[in-house]
Image 1: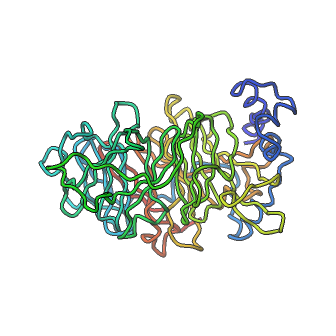
Image 2 (image 1 turned 60 degrees about the horizontal axis):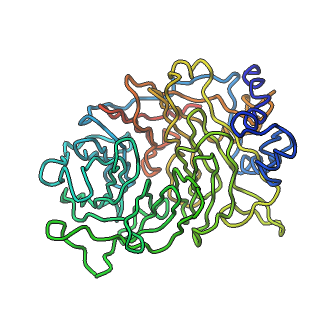
Length: 467
């Protein structure tokens, strides 16, 4: 492990020289990172007090003697066949979860030991869901639950290999029918979105919810599905109604947004192609309160804890964990969503595979879909982090990663990297790995079950209570 730490000795120099095209001079470090973020370029001088304070709040995690892949405390509850061609996994916090495939939406029942198929599948070509529409062929890559999980918004890309869409379909889950097709427009012109998400981490549970957020390369906005004429049109007799742009901003310069997520209070975190991670308050989408610099790799996925204190960014080769806490001039502790963080910003931590596991995962496979475990209640803390690479579902203990005294961090120079994790190995590439909602945690397990979807199967896995 010491040798791995030594490999990171010149991490910041590599970022500056190779990824950003600058020599690693003090002047260029300021240009790249800014004065507030010099701790990212010189981690040995960074203020880690916020990590320590957060660690004290929740207690220290026990440390293994050496960093190892742990698999013995993962218990597979059951595995069953999916309907094939699975594109995405959509977990519900209430009764049901869903697999969206090339051919339809398969419904699963939520239990404390995982999800189990109900034998219900709504096919896109069954007459309930149409295989094509005014928005093009229905091959959803993104599904979003709304209205107390009674409706689902399905977004299909305009072109294969590209995420952008000109609109979406609204599925009534109870009837299995598309009730409305919506178009994205602004000022009378058709526009596209590359991603959508709920207004807050828990708003899919709200039966009166009518708005959601949209993201495109240079746009961040909120949409309203209530038709401006007071009625929702029937798609059989009318053209697709237009979604109402309620608020947002279209940026003139290339922000190259890639992904976004929301906190429990509706603050927004956005990841970009240049590696930057921007924080927007719930009251303004025009200017970021905080913009964390990139480390040389594009952010392909981003998640945030319910309380907004921690951000998890996914890149092709590593995850980056960021603490957003800072102390303002009045001595009050805040998050970077609510104000400028000043010059006391903790350096991030990286989550990586060991060289052996990276080789076993396949050099062509990339990390994707890094998530925290799922809570929607104030005062509860997420327990684990999970991401997918090839046939591996990789799980980190959140407490362990935050613990500055953790074995992995000893004798490391540069940004601290954690190599302690558990691996779920499947026989085919994993589409997505997600923890179920905290509602489904049981007393003899430290966490709600993990659901792992591959193109042909879905598995539910529990973590035992042993530490």
